[in-house]
Amino acid sequence: MKTTRREFVQQAFKATTLTALGTSLAFKAFSETTSSQSGIIPGSALQFSQVSLPYAYGALEPSIDATTMEIHYTKHHTAYIKNVNEAIAADKITFESEKDFFANASKLSAKARNNGGGAWNHNFFWQVMKPGSAAPTGKVADAINGSFGSFDKFKEQFTQAAMTRFGSGWAWLVKDGGKLKIGSTPNQDNPLMDASDLKGTPLLALDVWEHAYYLKYQNKRNEYVANWYNVINWDEVAKRLA
Image (cartoon, rainbow, N blue to C red; front, top):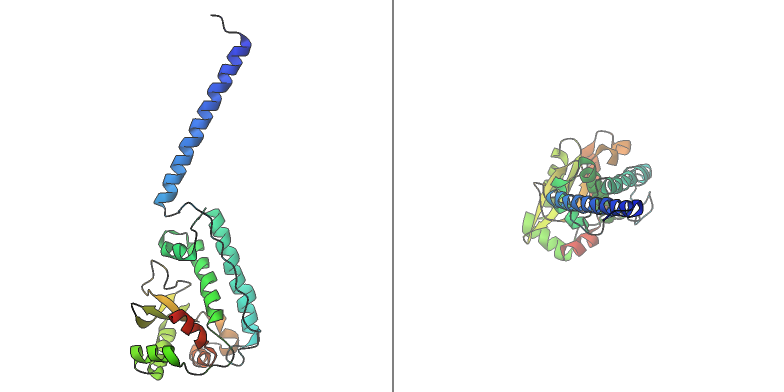
């Protein structure tokens, strides 16, 4: 049977469409397989957000000066939020929660891991501080005494962790298996990350990056750490301990 020009064009169009559809489906399957192997889980993409600072910039004076607090919050922390969300979009990361994000931190790009840590760590840091602080009481005091012997011994160990972290990083108090532990992490790593040597539920954190204290204390990290004990929000620690 002779094929007309119109029938020929229609048949060619159908063949091209089917070929394109097959290629598209194959590429989709390949992409999903690759994403699964790289630890990227299909779902709703996570977006980090910056918590509102729970006090005025100068509220933690004289332990933390207003200028440092303003720069730290509006420049450094804001940059971490912006950069991690850019990385999530660029890397097509679709973890649905911060927990999953950090549980797979070793599979992420350096930009996603570092800025994700910076975003979360600072959100946590602001909340575990408040103006005017006394020694912990109640269940927090009991847990500290049970794990370290006394509040003074806790301070000694925590100060050591903060002072011996070489370069930039964080000192942490975490709950792990019913006990409290003290340790530190480099850069913007935290105890929720799969690659972290220190693991547990964060209860308290101290930023020992130089930008956190250098305007007021210069190279005297020891003075910064000593004064920081005056602004710990033990009520927030108690909530996280529960």
